[in-house]
Length: 249
Image 1 (cartoon, rainbow, N blue to C red):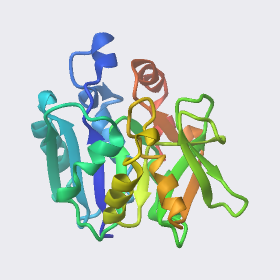
Image 2 (cartoon, helix red, strand yellow):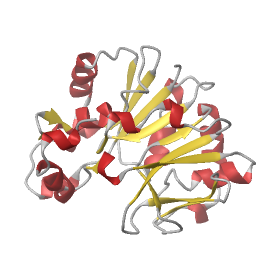
Image 3 (tube, rainbow, N blue to C red):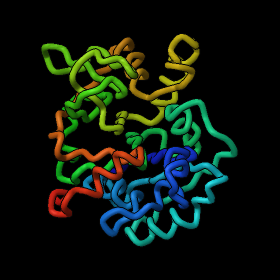
């Protein structure tokens, strides 16, 4: 399967440093794997020798050597690293800055480096035929997520950031059927500064532009037990308390 995969890991991980951790978040070990490896394991059914994988990193974190070692250990060879000199204004921009490295005609999958999803819960066959975009979701409390609102036919009718417009929260994975389309949507949508959320450029609201242009966005509903968010020290602590058996497919 020909696919562009963009992994955004261009944050400082300040909450972990503030909690006393001394290594970058993605290098932290949990159940004998780094958080980097847990995140990449989520994509096992999407990564093939043909996949083009681009990591967007923050230069000050000096991530390149670690990323190359880990990807080689995973048998991934078509790897590029984009090192940014400063923080961006959001994940949508971090992914956009990788565009020189992707194949513009291939689909684009964007994922973060701080979520583990049981691999069998995510497969390409989950993408509904005819989808221009796809957002796997789970049903979880809180309003700090990206949300997808499905219509009566199952296609998404709206997506919003930090607004609970439905019970379906994104797991942090975003798929577009064409990488070039993502770049075009970004240019069009963020031309209006009103589309920023708290000053940041998020990916989920970009699908509003896709839907407005007549595109179709599908969603999947994952089991809560299949998704493990690892973005804060508290979330990592909960993950560490789980038996390893509960993390396997």
